[in-house]
Amino acid sequence: MDIFKTGKMTLQWTVVAFILYGEIIITLLLLLPWIRPGVWRRIFNSRLVQSLNHFTNVAQYSTIVVLLLLFIDAIREVRKYSDIDTSMEIRRVAETDATVHMRLFRAQRNLYISGFTLLLFLVIARIVRLILRSAHLAASAEASLRQAESANKTAKRLMEAEGPDTIVGELTKQMEDLQKKLKTAETDRDAMKEQAENLQKEYNRVSDELHSKIGETSDKKAD
Image (cartoon, rainbow, N blue to C red; front, side, top):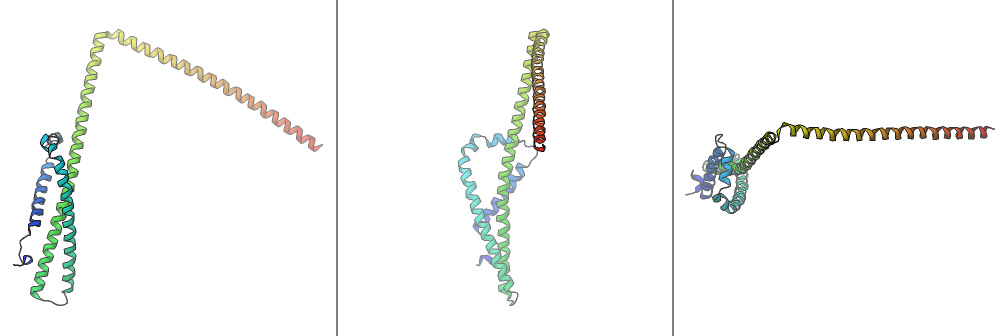
């Protein structure tokens, strides 16, 4: 029996269809709002998943290559039977026309199946990366919060142990150091200001002498 005259799918496209159904289920599970990223992170970092990580990487790349080849083949089939369907508009043969339309339908169906399977494969990979990144950011934020709380508790214990006089003494010392630095900066500023004034005076003197020399030279030339 001609496979194109029946509604049955070949073995390879049946496998691709089941992969598509599985990807839809996985996508829905990954998008469930009540499963937190930390749960997925623990699952992805479990020993079982880590032990299968190498094999899953090989399977991922192999699956992408196979799906891409099937997608390209489906595009070729669609273009092939579309051209045949256009050429048959001139001469209508009922049985041949039905066969061509059936093959065109199957080619289009295979194109959609392979295209959506490939697309969902890439979408799942992207969602997993975003979930892991979100879980990492949440863990970092939680660690920073714990560190800040620990530093706050340590500061409170030091204040209670050393007393307010010690804290005031440290603040006073810091103020004295800042005042010394301020005085040094003011001294440097005054020195630079005085140096700038001296340079300005010297510049004015040299400029006056230069003008006087130029004037004398002009008078001599006039004579």
